[in-house]
Length: 211
Image 1 (cartoon, rainbow, N blue to C red):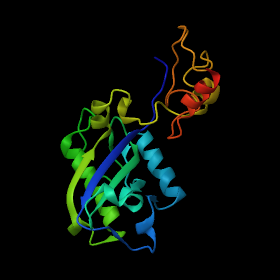
Image 2: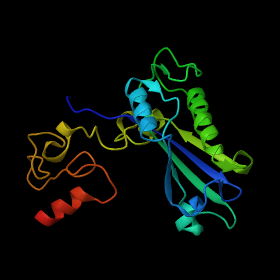
Image 3: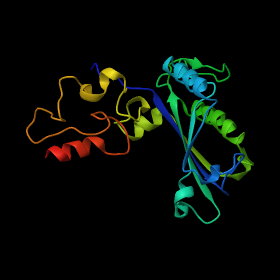
């Protein structure tokens, strides 16, 4: 019951009629890039989300799968997936003071689409003709993600907050060791265990070495 989860995640998926025409040279060949005003911007957005506010200028992680694997979409087309890692689980307000937030602090479909519009406007400022190239858009709020996967509590994709007291040998608890569960032959691996979230499968690798 004392285990803490982190900020929620907000995702947007796009199907585009053509590859994005980035205003920065070479960005069309990058598989993953981040749009942010800089370190101060990331800090501001994190602070706002932690306080339950929708960030005024969210950090936007932009994945371009077609840049590495053109077979992911039809010839001449493109796909993007956006991840906004600073999304509040329970919404207390809008840092920009423009979006009306519900009294019960819950995500709604209307708020999800309005917030996706904010991210889309930022993206469009970096890509020429972006809005005209959109075939389809699908957005997922932290609440949507949790509904799709019970492990994404509050939309947290990292298996729990990665503060120091929930990291390293203290993940998930200071009483757990070497991925043991206390039940013979049953082990606990994944993002909520040491060494934490990521795509490297670290917990499984460490346990396999022991076994």
